[in-house]
Image (cartoon, rainbow, N blue to C red; front, side, top):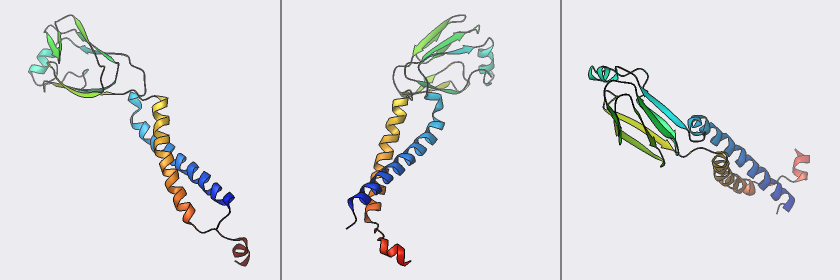
Length: 167
């Protein structure tokens, strides 16, 4: 039976390896989620003059994206600089005015939209990625990985000093 000191050392090293793997996995994932690592803010969508005519011709206005990603708490402020009235989901935006929409729930929305040729505008609303969320992800993946590695480390035989001297 291996000494307790060796077992404890294996468990600690295994947990550290698991946490390092958790950091690596979560931080790589974080690189793809950077756009949600911010506090809520007001995001303007400006409908330029002539948009209704462009949409009628089947053209996409160059300044308006097809879809956008937001965090919970963002407010979408739509400014209509066009001569025609426009709609974005529950918002009716008469010419020369603006309207806002509070995004208070994490969800993917598909709104009818009069300033897109496809008459559709997608809004992806995510929970804001905070430092606590990142730490939680690291611990949630790193500790189980470390425990799994520790289980494998415990079944590995311990080399005795005589075995290493004989080799």
